[in-house]
Length: 318
Image (cartoon, rainbow, N blue to C red; front, side, top):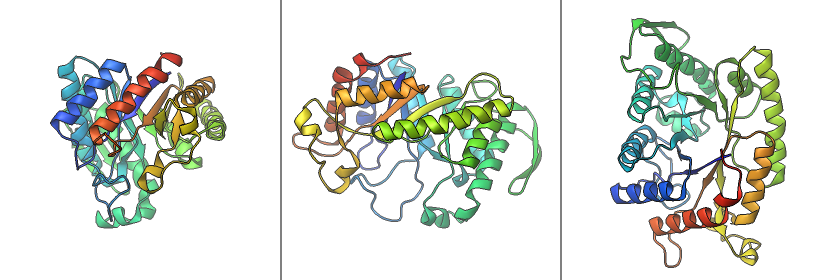
């Protein structure tokens, strides 16, 4: 099982020194991947007190450079990039650029989006998001896999165009669908490479993922796909602790409520259960808010140390 973390690409404090420190700690403890979230605009102050997210693609490009300099090669994943938010020709070129500059480390987490106000602010109809996601992804694949491409669809039309930049991964970076249901499962089986079911807590979430995974694999075979799809569990929100009594107490209210206090051994058991049903990767979202003696960065670094001490040595890694 690969283990990764969500990076806190928050506008308030995610700057050069913090980025370097978090990436350096990731290299030190041996995480396999760094995942990024995507919001273009937020209608109100988001939970977590961190003023929303930086642009996902720009942040990924910066982190690709930082990790290149630091001499390690984590996968750069997404949970999720909202595909309808950006014109697909432009998005195909951006993604190819990030994959090229990172040496082939991009893993696309393709989301359809859900925030209606965000769609409206971008001049988009939220009810078109499923159709747009299907078509936009097909446009991007066409541009990645053909030096000169043409496409004619409902939303996108062009003849004999090239984005020039080729992704390092061939035929293109893997696309994991961040959604559950008949249409997303069909999307995976038809032309994507895997699934991100979300990072629910406990054995009920594992059972739900197992049922969805069985359905996806059946469709995968039905569509005649070769190889196996990839499953990443992300993001699992968790406020790690080594104190059993503390883990059994109710988590504080407010935005901290999003991070249930989790004993390291409970996370280990959860990761093992996901590995048993065929998951390839487990991505944890650790808190990065002010708490006691810690500032934003200090809190996350402390949580990463707990992950390294109480979780990573006890789970199967691959």
